[in-house]
Length: 125
Ligand code: SF4
Ligand code: SF4
Image 1 (cartoon, rainbow, N blue to C red):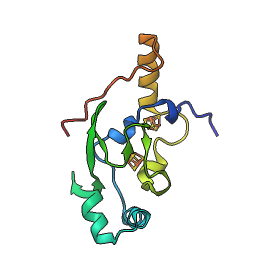
Image 2: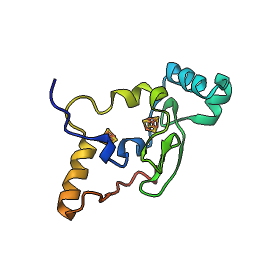
Image 3: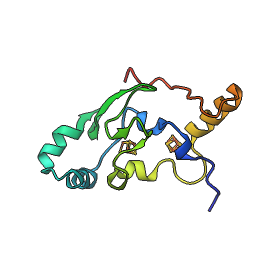
């Protein structure tokens, strides 16, 4: 297995700011269970149909990216439902590299600041 070249704990959560994060039926059921809500109620509260998908994550305001997944913990900068997160989130970015992290590392080294947060513009989506 190739060594992982990214560290989510040092990242502000670019992948969670992506506007289209799909949740499958099983993901919605798991998230509804996680919050102890009937599926129908959870569907309305946490998801919407958009961009040609039956179900994507609803989003909320974020100081860095404009908008981010509503389950993102904006203080800790990590997933707030880690154990119940959708399969899309589980498989991203796969083994090896994360393009967002490469970008972040490049910008941080350019700024000579290991805490620098460069933004992407997903906010208009
Ligand atoms: S963008 Fe990459 S490094 Fe950052 S949290 Fe997502 S997977 Fe981890
Ligand atoms: S469910 Fe968690 S990992 Fe997935 S996009 Fe939302 S905050 Fe990120």
